[in-house]
Image (cartoon, rainbow, N blue to C red; front, side):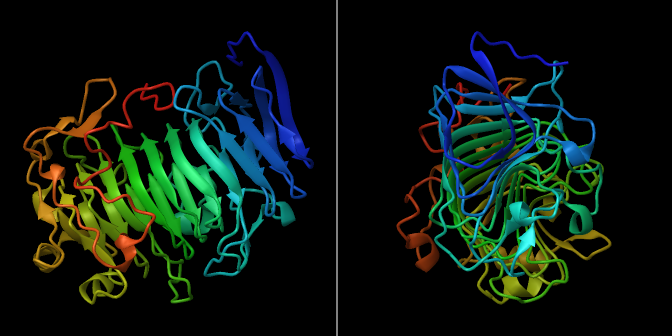
Length: 433
């Protein structure tokens, strides 16, 4: 069954798009199966276009839009007329379709590869050495009910498939701003290698990680939100941010290293009893590096910020990795800073002492109410993550040093994704329903 309510003409996207195509804002579109933009073609999607993804039962045939190497996508939405990809089902569910996948020629730490879960061919290849590769521009986009290619509780290293908004080897010439992924059955955002930067991202009630970085991703992010009102029944371990290098892990360059400022990661309210359902706010894993500042992490039970045996020495030695000037909370207070010892998660008092020293300057927040956000949980309505009077998030931002003083970052006084102006308020683009 489909549920397409529109007074517009309906057209279909299917097979391969091999020449430049601009969608018609006077039409609604059906994404029929796996559609490839190839042969260096450009797909342009004007403001206000809605694309309904056909629902196929088999994971191998879930609908997806794939922008192949050399091709480009231009999503030209606005806050009042976003571009929306959603399920065509009459009763929409997480996993109804697969992903929007962009494949580029920027570096990874594994050379080239093929997008996991899609057929192996030149149309699914990613990787190269063009750091400033340009795959187009994506602004004011919302994706709904993705993640269907992934099996429940899968082993992410052997079978993790494309899900949500996927950037594989996408270069810094590509623009990404104002993208929301909601009700994905697996990850909301995935980066596999590449150098693309991004601002104003929202992950809402994902089934696995909100933001997943691996295989040598190196880029900048600012104003990003991961928000959950419920635990996941899909993932083996669901994290707000999961950053890792590769499965071995190796030290093959480039090492995965997202540089993030003004992030807000919030888990479900209250203590979650099983880490099968919900895990860490930020998990620095498998030899990765990262740099996170001026951010808020709250309401995860297994850890606010967690390291593993390979990344614990990296953070202690300041080995091109840092976690500084953040406000951090965990449902279990002594796990605010935690250590995954492969079998169990343990509180890490030495890490706590190190990360709250005067250099790293992180603050432990004992109760989530102490963040003093206007409406962290809002009873079925849109959350309001604006800092209220007296909030520790109103000040304390730090942009010193090479990574954060560069021109990409807007220098704020506040910490977290939102200051006095709530760009994530309920809108036609940012739909929290």
